[in-house]
Length: 334
Ligand SMILES: [Zn+2]
Image (cartoon, rainbow, N blue to C red):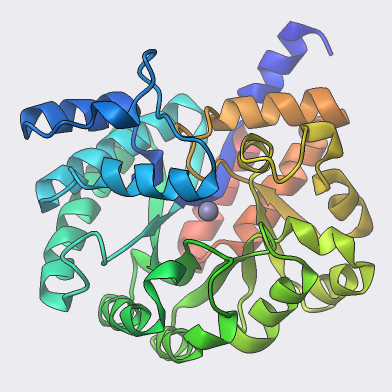
């Protein structure tokens, strides 16, 4: 594909469902905040200013160090603006972001409300100024354990509404089981929240099946390793589950050695509902424009396929129907 054509595809309007709030923090933003607060974070940056880590487990600890300078509601409001500027620069018109009450007030509902208020205000202002709509999915952290997840779920349930639209789980998939978090998922579901969880990024098809059976999720973060068992692939189709696929993240972390060996195209061709997201873009040196360009280059995806991908994303988006319809029109118009 010639560079001009790739550039055209990279600039298509986009919807993104899998974006970690703190994981989207540009390194310059974190460095600036660290120096304002006189915190030395030099060990988490490469000489070129990007985030530095060795592997997935080390990534989680760098991630926690980076987010440690995000303290006050105002810090999170500034992060919201920085995140939405990145979205706007990548033609993203709708994004859902994973927010953790754990990082915003230590899981206390009263504190969480203050953080959420600041985040939402910044998001509303950015929507007016930049035309990007953002919604939040409250996320518990798997390696913090099931008990902490309960407090997170209660924060989610207390603030479920127009802006907090879903509940999910991130963190280290190799610890514990999906079923350990059933109480939290039931609590979120009863509050009217839609559900997703990370599965099938590091563990295989059984983990994906457990996510659907034990937690009743309608979406799965990654889910790509389901390709190892076609019966489970078909189970996802039967259960109408949408995958939040993050190809650049998977390649960067070595889940697949290269994009041409990534299963997104095989899953799509078989009929699985796949969408495209960046996960933690500055940590994985990616952007939504880059994801689109790489998919076009590797699999020959054209406007029609990206339009289907965006329709799938909006079908599976957790926002209310009025928002969904408005975003669909924006995605169609361009
Ligand atoms: Zn993720």
